Length: 253
View 1 (cartoon, helix red, strand yellow):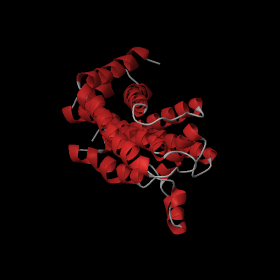
View 2: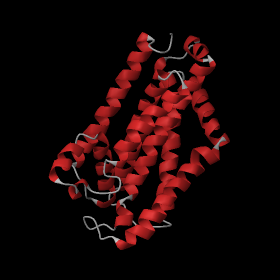
View 3: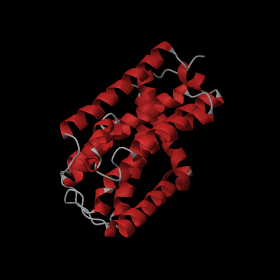
């Protein structure tokens, strides 16, 4: 394993984040803080508890997931797309660096940035809404698995995209709607029976449900199923990335 190569890619990507702190960190934290102010402090104080949890506290896991999914995809897709766009991807492919080392460098940096953001949002939520974390170890596990899985997914989008517009299509047109409809702001048990069954086809439901269970011990679906879903998605993305590097699809054309 070429650890020097992994470290070089990782540090390069992290340095780009610290050069754009306002865009990379401050802006998402500020946007999510507005959700806490509006839904947590203002509207939440007028709503009843959901499954024994105050509304303001109930939406915290969903809002963290909303930011985590979007930022993981954006960080990883932009990171690998830029060398493609600039033509420097061929230097990377011809260097004595394996595909696994490239993936670890880019995906590791994207996941690190997303985790930093998720923890900052969690700390910011404390300023607006009191909450408890019933299973802190599992909370970290869900955060880590989600950040790595969706960074891998973003890496695939970055390899697939051939213009800047395509980088934004899936995060904006697919991931954000699925997250909003995946129980970020409500429990799916509040929906009519038909919609409850339809919602179960939304994979984001399992992420938010499992992550919320780590906070309050309540979930819409079994936590074991949530864990299996995120691990399955991670393995699927990993397999797709390995296939792309083996075949050269979108890399050498």
